[in-house]
Length: 254
Image (cartoon, rainbow, N blue to C red):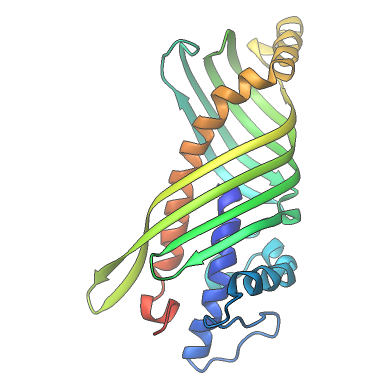
């Protein structure tokens, strides 16, 4: 979700320069202009985004980009069906708050304007999480049931994303619409606490949290693919809500 939103904002921050310039609107002083003819345009965009980091943290209303420090998500549902390691798993996270997002590092960025493909590789050194949760089901060999506060952090979070789009005719306008996204997430380490598991049972709650934090490889192996799937859906919807506001010829002028 957020991991990929940053990638999109990197590119749309660049595209917004073209929109304002084409409309003879004064280009905001805080935006560094990159030319599409620049053979090192990807590097230029990265430098521009580094300068925009404080604005990204606060949000950029001109392109409908929300603040990322902290980043808020009202609801995230994670569901896994039955298989060899998972008898069925449903988790809902509400009022999800993630801090540390503005400290992202851009490892690489590539925008293919002709094929409408955005490739982005990011690292988040530390992310802190806070949410209300409701969970029921079995993950690996562990039964989880309860509702309460979810707290945690993750370090060295890496995200590699590929977003693909096409052009859609909408009346007399052409719009860029994202239709597919691949995302791969790797987590270096994490620590989480689920409060009030099993109705607040202190023994079962502590034992379960201990297992969650000890069996990290097994937990990540199950949870990360589910998160990647949900993140892709959220980011495609987010991206299309932004691009639907602009005509394609303004986003990528000839």
